View 1 (spheres, rainbow, N blue to C red):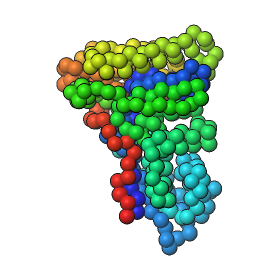
View 2: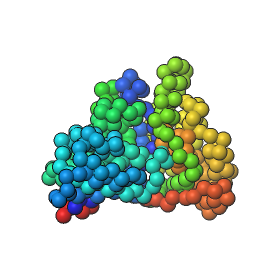
View 3: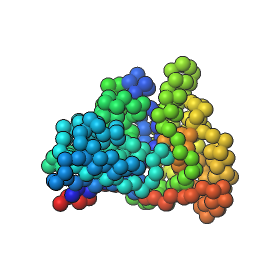
View 4: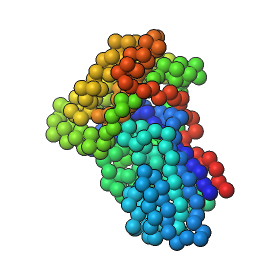
Length: 327
């Protein structure tokens, strides 16, 4: 039996500049972080069976890889040329379609387990690149490289993406005291709204490619991402919180699907009750709201609880994707 886990991620600054329609022309730059909420993959060889048993939100029992309905499982098995009947079960700390990168994280954890099954050691970089390749080139999904890199490496990361798609991943160097303060002051709340990241990103792409002024706003997002990174490195977390607000207000202009009247109401409530800034995590349209609040956290929590939002307490993950158990 093999058990792997991969952390979900928070998009913090520069999100969207990793999408190929932008990064292939202008390069991407963003700040992202992994958190201690995970997707687990449990994999076991089926010695006495000639069928695959796959458990996720559905259950599949199939004889051939090509008959598998789950696109990521099928693509990963084909990519690594695994035809032995195996049992694959997934467990998630947080539901899918909530903006924490669960689809990519699932694939990262799965690839790690499959490499272990083949008795192969795999680096974080290779894991991230394989997941990105499967999503972007094999499955042709409108996604970028942020999610697999954040999950594979873990920690608080700066990602630089050149026009050819190569990624330089480096940890953001901040003192432990700043890191701890950041953890204590970042609060995550579920809006209770799910969304289709593909739909939001596709709408954003259409709008940006048809409007040069809006595409110019993507350059602004990249610059804001640089400011967010700089604020973290300088330990100026109040400025970090304020830049989150600027980031969100800029990002909302890209697509009408980015926010909703409900999300706007929740966001305004947070700003009136102590938050210095915040943003929707992920593509937008639902999922989780991230806020930075230095004072009056109790007031903020109570105000959002009255709106029906549920907090997800978290810490940052520093391990990235890892093997938990291998018998």
